[in-house]
Length: 82
Image 1 (cartoon, helix red, strand yellow):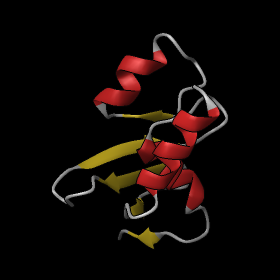
Image 2: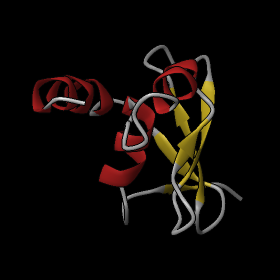
Image 3: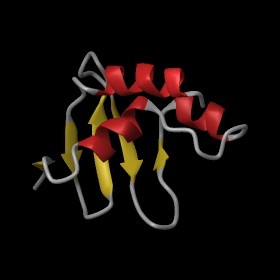
Image 4: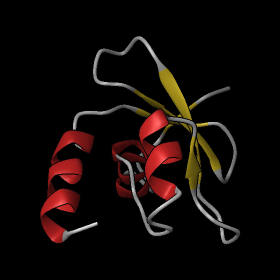
């Protein structure tokens, strides 16, 4: 992923809402608020259930989708569930 691609995804990640479920499990809403993607942030590897992540992770092991970026950016600023 180039720095330009990363910057574009970073910009798209800014308005997304992040909800922490457990210490390393989060839900991130899409831009319309109609779909939530499950994001995992831990030492064993970060992941997201979106199609963008599933497709691009195959060719780029360091790929970060906008949902992962939103979750990473909001560390410490979660809307806790439960």
